[in-house]
Length: 113
Length: 114
Image (cartoon, rainbow over all chains, first blue to last red; front, side, top):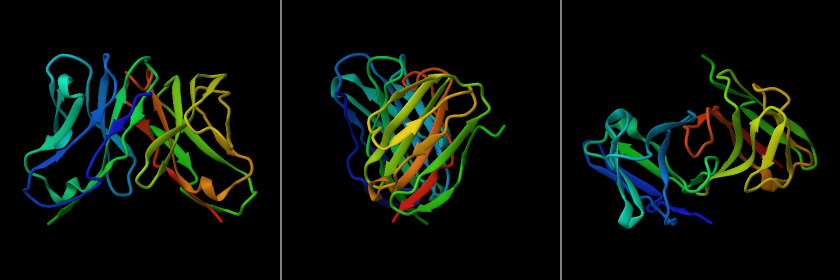
């Protein structure tokens, strides 16, 4: 079964710091990759996705993610975070079939003003 | 647009009680899902539906039931509530399968079973 690993469940950083959240998956075939974000008190929403093409994808609010096939990774980055980026971030991977999706355990990110 | 609407937002149940979590979407999506979210555990799929009249089990279906009589509605039923069902429940929908189409989530239902 496919699995998705997100490390460093709790991340605390100051405004203007750079953020990188790791996502690794265990599947050797073609994958579709997603990052979802859940702001405090809100529902989950799509941050960005990768299906094919340029492995560096840009999402909303200045986030980007890079797909590195050889490393089975899809890490999320933001060069300079803001207090409003405080949220929980989930990586999700589709591997095989259009209706299968595996979520990671999430990263709780707290940005201190 | 309302998107995905879930009710109630909060509920406290006693062990053995039953309840239905309501979910409705107005985007004409065929695919609908119920997830539960436990702290530090990510999201686990309970049940899903690929269209009216069609439902199937997800990763953690025990203790739950669903129905899909219309495209819009996908209620989740807890028959005999247990403390292990204390969780936050999210309903979601998508235009195509969730592996190829972004999920649209509701605001969640926080359920406590005591």
